Length: 457
Image (cartoon, rainbow, N blue to C red; front, side, top):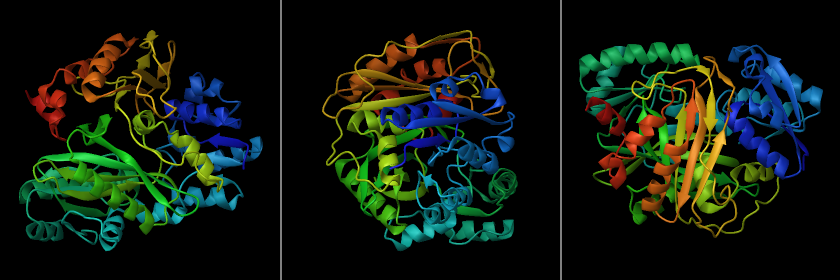
């Protein structure tokens, strides 16, 4: 078992991983950019190394700088968090080649799931439902038009090598497709260095539901329940909850079984997520993509299962058994991603944090299975006096609540959102107040179009 872990990330996820690393008795090593020198995660670590200037390409995305920091600190393992180098198979292989422990899935699994077209084909061959779509990259706009005619409008235009909703758009006819194709191709090349485009049948009333899986050291794959991620702006998640209020027990069982098959198909190890689209009208589901890393929204699964997912990542990476024998979900949990952004247009709003007052945290952080005591959990990346710069994703914190049932969780969420004070810059906390008063969200009947409808009204 290794005894020191370098966290190759920043902000709230770095703080989150540091917490578990230190709780397990290991040394936590942070890396940071010049812009992040004053953030909490730097002082929370046992040791911190400056790796470059603010620009991500010269710091957090600089594999050479990260590996040099690992050598300087004698780190024995590297945890990538999410984003940056987390799903970079070449970096994962370099970590392994350096003789370090990679706290993530095998590089080959990252490669297989990193290309959405390859992933779709692999999942279809494994018996996992997939949406109608293209099995090869669509090389020209004319081929896209031909393919769409076969699939049937509306279609979703997607970057084959991307994520985070970048380059995605819906085309309802040929004219929209021609525009969407060129836009998606340009963005795919710019953001991912891969211009390949795929088309999929678009589900009009869709819910975005994902399954948390763990690939164990002995080769077993287990599913730890699902999360509903349908509250999105620009195809990016802002609120998640578990269990999903929009699926039946029968559908849940089918989705969890399919997620296990998906993990087995790529020899998965560690924490991963199988994302699906659910037709809200028919209760059918299809595979969307697989995230080969820890998800932003992992805390709500921890809150209802009592399982520390970062702890399991560390144990699995070391070849050890996980620390739980059985599991069952209890209660209901909701996560709100608190961003430094305009609550109306959702545009980034960097600046100085003049006031930071968190809601009073009751109960525990959610670890310790068997309790549904109402609790509030804040995973924060900033504190009062910190500066939010324009160089990174403007996620400030994750506000999570857990209660015995969904109605109680919503009530607790209203109290927590109202009590969370952040001043000096704009945040999306007012949007959450609006959301918690929305009839669709309150009743759990929402879909991925909810935020668009709220802003159109």
